[in-house]
Length: 110
Image (spheres, helix red, strand yellow):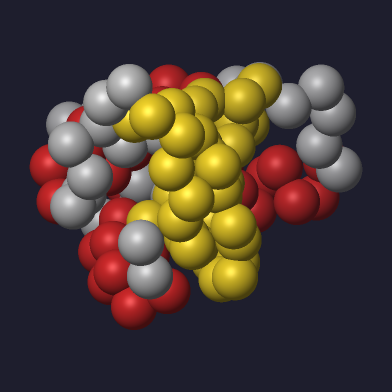
């Protein structure tokens, strides 16, 4: 059976994350997205340490769709260099995994 992955990214606002997440779920590239507003980030950018308030988005999808999900995030992302991290999952409850795979079946072939 195919494995599930999380695709982690951040957005400058919950509104932008929700717009992107809804589009990706509507395309069945992800079965679910979780949007977590209120994160504070400290990071290096253009030679200095910056501080930003961001929103985390975690997309739940199948491993074979990770590249397409990453591409969809990049295509509409407002950041020049968005964080897009694909995280393999060690274990997923079988019933949940079946649901995730079922909900992303229609997107499994481009």
